[in-house]
Image (cartoon, rainbow, N blue to C red; front, top):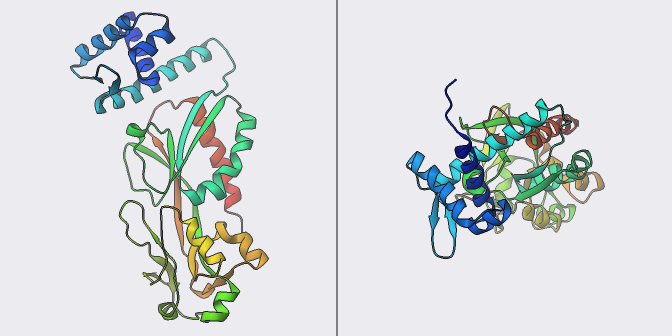
Length: 307
């Protein structure tokens, strides 16, 4: 096989990644024990080879360009794979290490994933967990995430999609609210109620309520004086304090339903759900910390399917 990279080229890639991670040539030089000029020359060799500017340079800082960010993500993954391959070939016991950056919706984070993380860390103490709780879509390359959990994930050929669960929906309210406003018995009755609304983060569009009626799926956009943006758990809090009806995931309010804090409304029209999916970039060899986390979630999801 013809060589594509010599020792200098591989060393330049390592120094480029170090500069990207530390935020500058001087800090990379200190970490590597060389001069800033040597780091600058290494990056310059890469830029000349590819005909691509990797950093935007000013007198005070250097910052990755869009192309530099994409190149860094691929190089970081490749160097991690090389290091793991070397350890494996030497017969060392592999133990996952490093930072794992994952983004997830607030509801799924609080009620599904965050409670599991201490157990994961007990098994893999070398992994640092950086969790981003948000309902907006993230950019893997620009924001440096390793994986994300999303609702209704759109098909993307650059991402691996692993189904976690179809989370059942339920409409809830307090007994006090229902005594005051009446209990709806049909979907048409929703027009006379406060139906707390959640706005989608990216578009500001109100999310529809999903039902089943006479074997057919129905989608309803109800009215309310309450609109919640960004954190859907705000709707649950309002419902718990008697503001009105709210449709949310059953796993969020199962304790409230069990202790009577909230009451299920319109159960005859239930049965709908929304899918949650784990996403991460395609890669022939994932870093070990990602592989063990994916395996961990796939094993845990079986419990979520239990009634």
